[in-house]
Length: 287
Image (cartoon, rainbow, N blue to C red; front, side, top):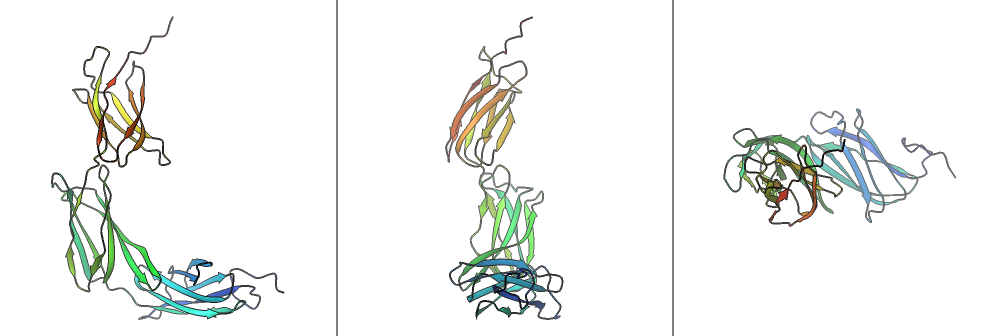
């Protein structure tokens, strides 16, 4: 029995089943570096992933023989897959020839506020390609960009099926359904973002009941994301803080010379909560 197998290099000393091969460009026959190669058996008991090196070579090792499916993915090429039934203690050579993607389609549009209709600047848009295989779908990140002052965005893409993710601070995240693009297509896809509709609002006043401008008010979540959202009261002592999700928060207020304010509060998923705050003068230290 062999006990000193090299887990990184195929050879005669293998004690496990492995796949190796070369990934090439179908047009130039040049090696494709940094292509993702991953595979699994029919029962998903064994799953492995790797990347091709500068020579386009990859190596995957599994625990047992059986029927395996391998997939190859690269942002600049059409995905490919192949399958084989292999015995244990063997290395199977499986090469791939990838077809380059043709960037002859365009996806463009405007991101705007759902309520006002005004264009939104600095919103991010991420494009994911939806790749369909016989045993399911996978999502591969393609590109990202941000909107300009006019709320516009644009991507040069290729024929395929995509999903876009759009987000901006203060707005609910948007995910599209499947967007299918044919070769040469120009598709306008506008997105309206909905402002966060949950949070806390109210008035900060002093001990005499007068509105208190310039007070720092924050809403802090104790969940694993540990998010804190902060604002300052206006000239009327009013504040408003919107948050991306409901849940348990701590409402805090701070002003020099006054006692810090802390109050646990529950924010609903779909509405604003009114909470007025009274600031009390901090006692002076005794001399």
